Amino acid sequence: MNFTAPNNLNRRSLLTGLVAAPLVLRFGQAHAAVPTLFTQGIASGDHAPDGFVLWTRLASNPLAADGLGGLSAPIETFWEIASDDGFRRIVASGRALATSETAHAVHVEVTGLRPARPYWYRFTAAGERSAVGRAITAPRHDADVDRLRIAVASCSNWERGYFSAYGHMADEVPDLSLFLGDYIYEYSLTPDRADQIVRPYALEEATALAGYRNRYALHRTDPDLQRLHAAAPAIAIWDDHEVHDDYSGIWSKTAGLAPRGFLARRAAAYRAFYEAMPIRRTGGGVSSPLYRKLRFGNLAEFFMLDGRQYRSRQPCVDGVTGGKGKLVTDALCAERLDPARTFLGFDQERWLYDSLAQASARWTLLGQNLVLGGLRIGDGGADTQYWTDTWDGFPAARDRLTRTLAAVRPSNPVVLSGDYHSFWTNDVKRDASDPSSETVATEFVGTSITSGGPPHDALMQVMPYNPQVKYFEGRRRGYMSLDISPKQMTTRYRAISDVRDPKASVATLASWAVESGRAGAVPA
Ligand SMILES: [Fe+2]
Image 1 (cartoon, helix red, strand yellow):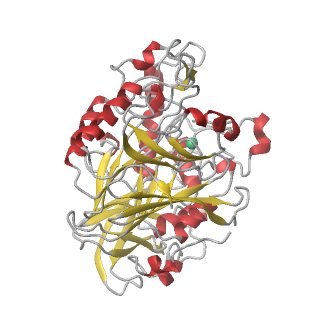
Image 2 (cartoon, protein in one colour):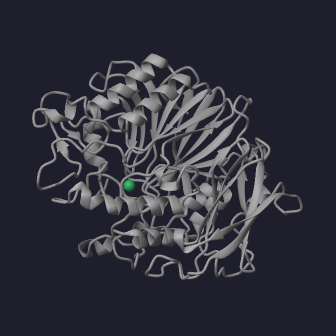
Image 3 (cartoon, rainbow, N blue to C red):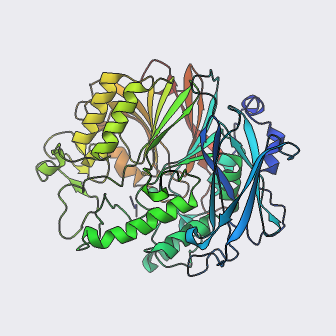
């Protein structure tokens, strides 16, 4: 989607977490004063009880026009994992060849480690040593877990501001960081909006592999984002801007551009995403589905969804707007209601419904891109409008999901969403057209790291038609911080002071709690 203080860190939770607070300072500290190869930082992600993915990308000139980071020859890269942050006890090590085939990105899928503990990792290449990062292994699937802290991000537009929100996420030392899409933006603001540019890309719009690679490369030079990736393992999915604004499945929003013309661009974008993210490549890299489940003992299970790749086209596309999301009424657009249309794709739907039926952790977390709770722009009558790029454009698919939640009743379903550049606390109703229907899940929507917010006042005017929305705030940038225990989940909306300030402060705007066994959040 494209829209034209003191922090209250809980010291005790930090100290009783997987890692003690004083060690935080080490994360992201490079050994070389100015890295010449490790300009992109390091990352870990996709935890398992016996390991995780380690990532780095070598680049001597990160923004080289050919997208290859200034390198051509293969470079042997060593990795080490230690059970202590000083690397006195190295428990695993190996080597990987960084080649131009992947723009010298390195993915290591580590196995054989012990569950439920932190590890520290670093890389060495051509005599240069990387910064030190912290990773964690998950607890065994049925292990009792008392607490889990997650920081949730979406929508980091480089042009729009500084990534101080990422820096504050790193400071919280979450067990996991979730990225729910729009990690990059493919476009640049047009000259008539130049006054909104805080820091220019100095790059063309990304439309091919080199351009997408350089978008990620630019982001990964940001010190706050580097620090976050070094401090906390990631779980990442994508939304539209990793490819193109409001694309839907094989359909571009560009008028007259047929899928055959769009798919090469989409494939290049997907390839750059897999190269840039600490995601498992087992099974063939970009041919692996992005949707996946991960678990954190008996406390939480994550269902990470792909809400872009397999979608039907938005309904009632006209020749002018192409596939771009827009407002429609059902009188104008009966196609919106067609049950043959899908949001996740029918294979992913089947996988999700089967997985939800088998879910056995205390908290069932759905990480996905777009607001599920719904937004009626009108009183629900014939004139009511719906925005077609979100789940509201796919009501039959949404209905299949909420019906499944009502039928199989996974434990404490909570939906975590991005895209809308605003904070929302929602009841996810069994029937989106009936506010009095059962609440089948709770939804928290995080705001953007930097991207511009929606028209706050206009949205507030339609909130009386949307009693499922318990909280909405569109004017602030930041992220969500979740503390999860067997009895309760607390979500804090963390807002930064000013997106134009690289040293912006952060404060908690609102806190919401979900009690185990009761769908729907209450003020905490
Ligand atoms: Fe966004």
